[in-house]
Length: 305
Length: 159
Image (tube, rainbow over all chains, first blue to last red; front, side, top):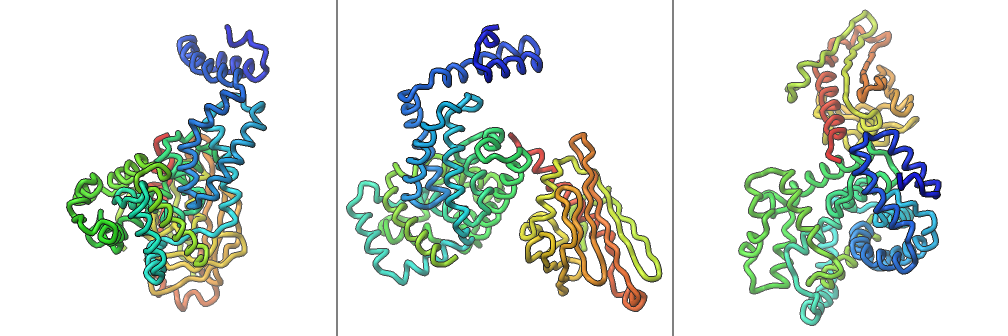
């Protein structure tokens, strides 16, 4: 009853729709949830927007870094998202959470940027490794960061995350965007539909195929989960940055490594996602070292692809 | 070719042989959105991941384009095929001088669709080389079973 008495056209329409679709008992639950969203957006001031933006900006920056691999692009897109969000605040109808709405703006800006770029290749880490080996300057800079920066530690989990970021850029763009939104940032399919402006069927297709491809790639490549895997960079780099540490002792601390023998590829992928979820690439103890490495790989890929 | 899916046992292809042609057709109900099935049928590089009858498809499945297909039926041979027709979520046709393959999707409106795949090969010289062409039935059944399994897995993904 309260909902219908509101004069805002959008609200009234939604209320009538709810009344015609739901039984009395479910109407109460749905209306309460809806009320909270609607009242938030009706009272959305610039101050409240700034507050909410601040809360959303950490996962947004992390997401944008993982899809663009560029700190500069992240800063530009976050700034543009803030400006656009503030400009369009009047059009925010509360039909989704503000976080979903802001991610929609950020994703559109990122897509414009990424569509102009070529996708990376599956063996990106092999190519970038070769390039790094031939440029002593890369390792000198990295060792300097390792020695002086509070965010210069080398951790295997951080490298696993970094590696996923690089290889995911070999997926078709939509698959990469969907995969991160669902598996790392835990958006629902319905929210991803809204963020990317595609149908539920397409979100499911992108998620399924992106996930399947990444499982296949890591099963072939990653020596942590497959003894036949061709990539040993975690162990190599751990030897460079943590020479006194025994890799095998470190790696068994990671659940994904301990579970590898069971061979459940889907489960191993979920464990990999868990590792990534728990790392903020801008705030972690290895952030500066990994961002330096990411910048190197981005430069190499820009020339290569 | 080994049948890898028990599902394929329930999908039956039929072949009609004539003097100058041979036609194989298979039909199945797939409980998935036509957009999903269409994406699977038109994603060339992704075929080997979900379709056990395809070794590789190079090229872009778009009208007027040419693709290079290697099938498990004869993995030593590369078929150069032209994409002749594309009506999104409805009909896809490719072929070469010897034959034509038609994929048809009919939306049943109940969350399912009827998929059919029909290949007709033939020509004036067909009687001379027909005995060298292996039967398609089991490969068609497997193709369709793989498509159904993959499309329905995507459709049933958790929301």
